[in-house]
Amino acid sequence: MKKKDLLQHLNLEIEQLKQRRYEDLLKLTEEVEARQSGEGDSFYQVEIQAFCDDKTGTLRVIVAMDDGGLRAFKPLTDDFLITRSGQLL
Image (cartoon, rainbow, N blue to C red):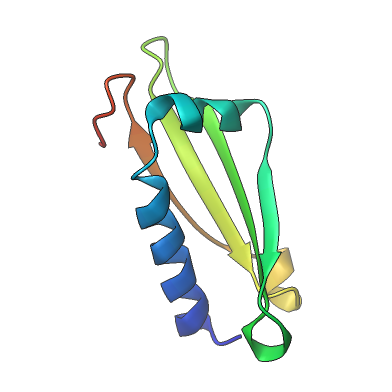
């Protein structure tokens, strides 16, 4: 998959995650969400994980995406922060 196409999927994934509630994203601190999608030239893998950044409970949600080829050794990544009140930072 071309890098620009993979970036589009990554951006879409981030936007969808930002719509989730804090409580749902908090579950990602305990278990990584991983899946594969597409076939052939449109195949990609996604891993989503969250970490508590500080004592206030702010989460850092990280998405890593690759095409299963050499990109798997250096996946494209993006992240965002969300507070307990649901505010995106």
